[in-house]
Image (cartoon, rainbow over all chains, first blue to last red; front, side):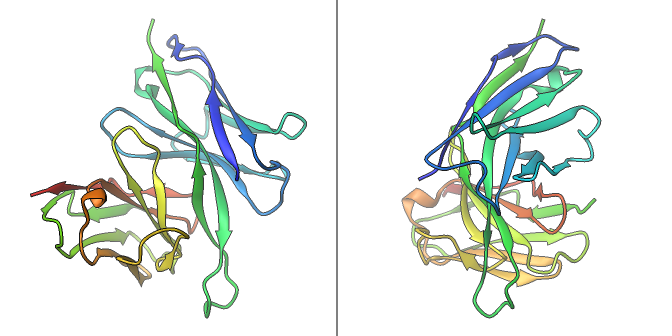
Length: 129
Length: 106
């Protein structure tokens, strides 16, 4: 059973770069067909999708964060990473790493529907001087 | 961007009640709609994928329906463990979440 674990600094200074790593255990990050994603949630607020990467290294980002975000994959270490530059207090949140898996539904013609079925426990990042 | 709007934002109900949460997309997303349950201090949990597919291990009292721009999550008979916040998410293009619906005990 695949498990994910976030790690990284819990405190980042304004204007600096937030860097987090998600370690994958119980399976290979190189297994095809999955997306590896980052999602965040400010305290008391809703979920915000940050971006994702597939096993070929192709990325998709939230347009509102695209200029500051980079997600990368390290297959040798079986982990993926998030970098968010020029952070402000608005970037303070719980950051989750997650896996998106493809699902099919009988009678729907073989289409794949991606859902986020495995989540890390989340790590709190505070942006403050 | 596709905007996802959930209603209501909060809901009070009793154990045994049938509840329905609605999610509307600003444009058609076919059936690329997921539902998640999140309890306080925990990561979200996938309930429904593809608008109506029930994730493994999720009780059958959870039912998703809809297509194009309007979707619903129905819980047929609320159990104590169902009181949580529910989010819809479109997976048609770059994913995005609705703002959430907090389901509280009446």
